[in-house]
Image 1 (cartoon, one colour):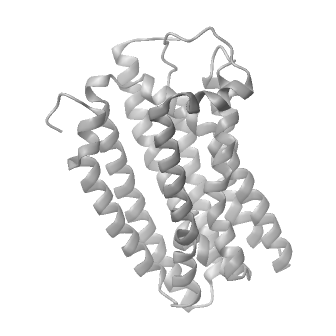
Image 2 (image 1 turned 45 degrees about the vertical axis):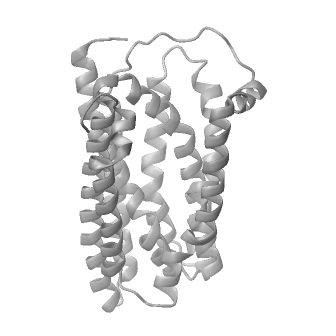
Length: 294
């Protein structure tokens, strides 16, 4: 493994591309696009809402990630294999069910692929983020992360808007399934870009702990800190409230209000703009990147 300023700088550029392609994928397989796709396959509103909660529910697989990757001398080869499967499966979640004639079977296949995809995503992201953090000096960490997310949200919003308009046009002509097939292939292409960006990342050498923890102790460790326990409880409470209503917002707009994909992506762009403003000019950047004016 190589540890140098040039390697870290190259990694940061690669991770911008990784986030840009990854966030674009996420935008196209959640929210309005997910709700419209499940409805097109014949899924009910309750099933649609259940599908929308899967990314959060599958997040439980994060706890297994540390247990697996911390035992590897080199994390990058294993991460690359997992990312390859993950990013291709995201696109296939749209492509394969469309090719199945029976609606019930198509929904079952979609549910399986979608669940497995986000389970793998939850398993891979902790170590990928760990490698990212290792590549960012503390002095620029807040500014870099804010700019990286701002670029990713901006590009994902524009892509979602363009494909949303395309789906509206094809829905009018009765070709919505072909529209989603194109969206699925776009997700696959974005996945290839994401795989390439992760491939180009070099694992930075860091001081690794030699202590081995049992899986049971890993689960207990975060709760030993009183301050961190408060963060966990607050985050759990916020997520509980968020997941009660948020998954059904897109379903409500698609199934009951018949809002166009274009308008739903416009709402998403408005949300992204506010998030970008907060990321670039809010307190969060100063907290992560202390001692700077931003």
